[in-house]
Image 1 (cartoon, rainbow, N blue to C red):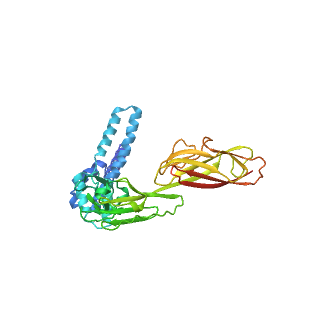
Image 2: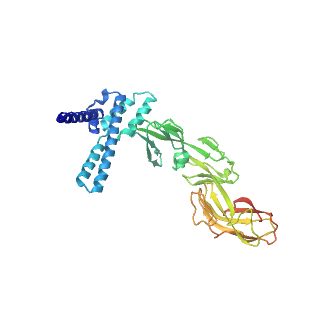
Image 3: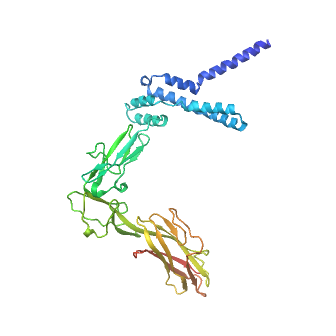
Length: 406
């Protein structure tokens, strides 16, 4: 009787195990089933479901194999370690083949949107071979020049791609002219410069198309003026809404041409692409060191520091700073500081050892303004200050602030 119950129990366990294996096939079985399929005769939904199940099985078994690998390593069991390693290596081979990937893509391209985008994204994520490439061909050939350059972009199909515009090109506009657009053929514009398009499902090439003309572009003043071949070029004067911005001229980076006097400009060659140059400086957080600006002590040497940022697109050279006040209650000990050079887009302070692309705070009393509030100055006296920064060409930026005597 006891033996009968034991056999019955063993049979039950074996049956349950067999049922579990049948209900959840392992990765090897899933992969074998997919390899046996005729992909072209199966629906996309069936194929997607099969690959998703395979990926789930691979992920689960790989997790267990990594655990076994770590356990074997900690125990110094080389045999178990090698077995787990081989399992992981085998699981990594259970991937979609190039032939299967191409067959799936062929079916996907017959679909309408949005199903095409849905399955295209799935194939991109699951096939190591499906990587559509968008090639941007900048090449051009003329009587006296030959330019060859291509750029490749690989992204998930349906995702956004922003095409280059003239501000991103550094090619010789004297020879090439200006970028008028991008074409599926080299002789007709399909997309505008800077236009955002969808990544294609298959490899595509877009050709840069150039035309004779002169363009003036500036994001700060919202200027975008184009003079095509034959039109009279009238150099615009941009106006910025930023009161700290000083217009420094129009610059063509590809040829090094700088226009500071509009009346003297004469187009040469096939054209030019100009961007506005702006000198702009932001003075930030002029502050009293260690004391509160609302409670200045009298008869004490006080330091003042500040931060500043080059908010333009031109490097600023020979920068100097000056601090002044009309108050008769203040004696200046150090009213000018040497700052040196600050590249476009960078920030610094009056005593920072180097500029960075992050805002900085003043540290220490080196290279700071110094002043003394006269003894006997009435409590609550407001002292106005003006901080001025000047560059080597005489451009000036000012910031006013106030302090109050304790």
